[in-house]
Amino acid sequence: MFLIAFSVFNLLAAAGAAAAGIRLLAPEGREGWASRRLLAISQVMCWGLTLIAVAATLAAWALAPGQPRFAPLILVPIAWIVAMGMIFAIVDFAEDGVFDFGRGPPSPPTAPPTAPPTA
Image (cartoon, rainbow, N blue to C red):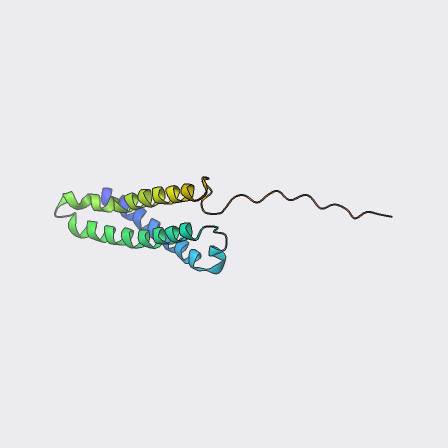
């Protein structure tokens, strides 16, 4: 049951990460990022998670049935998410001292449009 549950998690995480990675390749997916460094970390996280989740799931199913000590291989993608999240947070804070997720500081509020003066 353990392998089945985490296999489903890993395959869904891989599919979600691949979709996010594809979005980050498109120009409209990249334009909102103020930091190119954080964009690169996000791309590495997405494509790395896709590969690691599939590889860990396949390896766990190949090795765990005969030797249960290999079953924790299926948890490697969770460690990848935690590690890359920490790296992302450290770099984000180091760049500007604010956790803004690479989107840059908030834009100043705009004044509501005023009616033109009437004569």
